[in-house]
Length: 295
Length: 185
Ligand SMILES: Cc1cc2nc3c(=O)[nH]c(=O)nc-3n(C[C@H](O)[C@H](O)[C@H](O)COP(=O)(O)OP(=O)(O)OC[C@H]3O[C@@H](n4cnc5c(N)ncnc54)[C@H](O)[C@@H]3O)c2cc1C
Ligand code: FES
Image 1 (cartoon, rainbow over the protein chains, first blue to last red):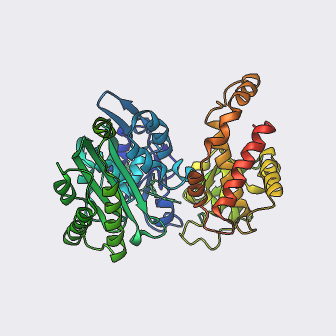
Image 2 (cartoon, rainbow over the protein chains, first blue to last red):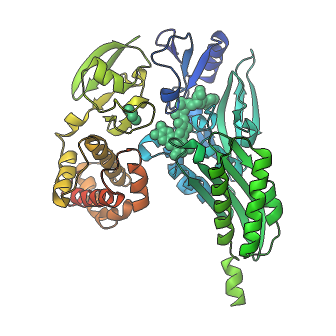
Image 3 (tube, rainbow over the protein chains, first blue to last red):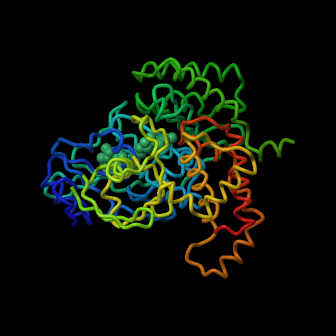
């Protein structure tokens, strides 16, 4: 373990990290630093807060794959995940990754950091929720390390991050399931204009003229993530193509759902959400195989 | 504080700095190097780019402790390279270049896109002969590796809108052509 001095600690294993956390109650985990370097007063700093850099812990960089899912260590960068992803992941995740910041910044953004920003929600958590991904958390605050796996959406409640002090995101578990209709939209700039930005991740299976396996997550950077219950229930088993009148009515129901469940969503965000869902609904057409058959 | 040892534009330096001090601040406060970052104030202006170990980075996002033993190239030093001459030639050929405020940043964003387009296929560890052979083999479809949308996104890192997305895209694709033609590896 490197102790540059009392302020910066760079453990090399999870065990060393555990000891570090037990000995230092006031600290912050440092991953890619793209969020922390701008938002926290890390420099110049007057507080006694320690910085625990995660960059030397090999376990956090591991990527493993089996037939059902890929497990990605939390220190893997978004660019690296994009490289791996072209071989393994669905378009929803690839679109999300390539829409996150720019190549230069993605070299630095880690998956763990993208999930654990504490008062703003970026695009990755919503997409991973839509893909039914989960995270392995390890609680380092007790004398024995306790590990648990939870669905990504359980990490958040509205705009709040529910990660307890002393808990580390160790890895992300991403199912290798694909859907034949997937869409990612980010309207606005989550960094420069978070209160007007809306991020959509939508997936469904089109089975001839029916829709099923529907999931929609909507992210409002400052208000949080919402997993829609209205959209799956409105669309499940519905005949497609969806006629404009129905699309408009469904989009209005989505806005009502947002108004009931989310606080802090601005009128512009609601309008954008309405338009995006309408656009998605218009794009849903019967599967090509079915059209070929009837032609 | 840490004793930081790093290479800046081919000169090895040692200095004592706070471990979390951003590279941008080290450059202008400790090393008197002018980089145009004064108006940023947490808005990600994208003007503070430098090259860290061959890759462009936003220097305000890199803390001192991550620089231990690393090589940093500022824009002034990058200007001596064949890669810069390639981009400069393109500006001249198209009679179109970024304004003085974002000239350095936009040029480095272009460099990062060109590097990515080339390194995608050419492994750094191969010998010179195979490298030349491979470069020749990929010449034809290489040009298509940067699409308009990607270029537009990459340039969004810099907030100055002195050039249109179309102008910037033309610069990148022309510079890539030139780089391939002249074998600027
Ligand atoms: C110029 C720029 C443009 C951007 N554009 C976009 C964009 O278009 N879309 C988008 O979605 N995002 C964007 N981002 C935001 C970016 O996604 C976040 O800054 C990033 O997710 C933070 O990741 P990091 O690895 O740098 O984390 P850090 O800054 O190191 O850490 C972020 C937080 O996570 C905590 N943390 C880190 N790792 C762990 C872990 N393993 N376990 C527990 N806690 C942890 C840290 O303690 C800290 O609180 C942009 C950022 C920049 C700088
Ligand atoms: S100083 Fe503006 S982005 Fe770095």
